Amino acid sequence: MPLVIPGMQSSGGDDKTSKWMDQLMGKKLGDNSDNVTFAKKDLPQQHRVVKGDSMMTMDHNPDRLNIHVGDDGTVHKVTHGQATSYDYEGPTIMKTTKHQDTSNGHGNTYISMEPDNE
Image 1 (cartoon, rainbow, N blue to C red):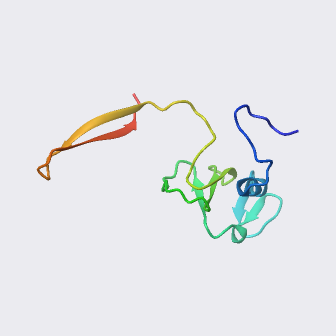
Image 2: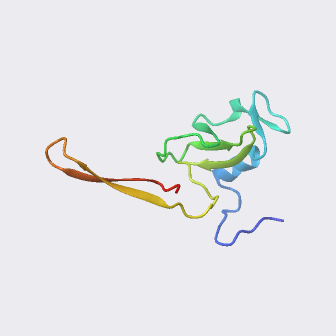
Image 3: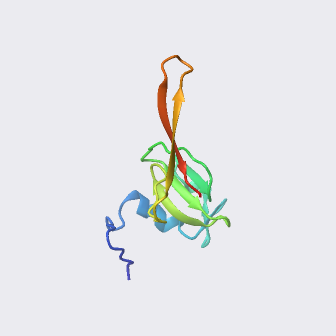
């Protein structure tokens, strides 16, 4: 029986991300394919493996396969394009800081944002 999540739509499993999810979810990446491993050589040329809290570029490349793995190397999420997530962990409170840059003589103002962990 399919899992139904209110507010989320599926294309019926025939899009490219669903195809890769079916092949990779719950498996580890290795040299050869079997019941618990998917061969790295069978991944598309444009892919990246994202481990835990690793940093990554946020550029949008709709053809790039993002393979998210846990600490044990098991695939737990697959996306295309930039690293977007369907996992909702609630809002992030951001702290903004206003800065003045007078180094060029113009007095430019810019704002930086970072998570407020307090």
